[in-house]
Image (cartoon, rainbow, N blue to C red):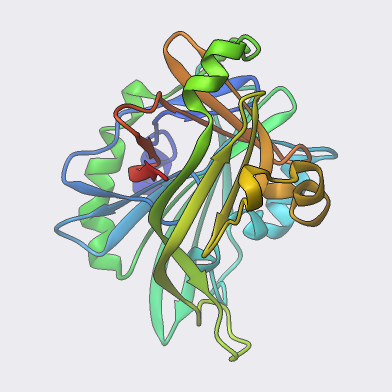
Length: 282
């Protein structure tokens, strides 16, 4: 329990949000993955990982929801817990710039093995983010704890300045269709949590000159060089949004209901990097 209390102060990183940003320095000896939303890190020398999810807006009593459900539906499908062995233990702590921080420690029983977890809810204003750490075995968890604790000193929440609206010149420089290869979650026919798998697939971002953006897997057709963003928003709202350029950075906001924010470098020589994936302009 003492170790878990220390880990509750141990996570940090850089995840951009609607009006807040969580800053952190990832631990040494990890591999950064582009699977899923936010930032995902896997330790190289142990079976352990940590995910930092994007800030998103919420309504209602988020603390109560977290203590009731662990906000499991905020977690990517492959990392969602199964069969929580005993009641989670909750601890409130503090973080610079945050209004509320609650850490939940628990274990799940997966295939007869105890899988330790520590999940943190970080709230700032009407937005919240989740930091989720887990390990495949108790031994791996014990090895990971010191590395996670080293992250504590750098962890804070800042207020992010809203970027300026897109200008015609900046929009023309970004506009176009970009293609990359990104892991895609494939659900199986078996109705068991975690029974799916990840498979590499084509992934596209389409930017209009007036600041609109759409992303999709597998194929994205633009007949005659045109694309109906309004129709795309009606059928697939979570993957439609706006973008702008500010301070030499590209700011992308997707999904108006639960905004997902991406901040990255501007395209260079026809290449755009988003969440460690390189997209080539078509």
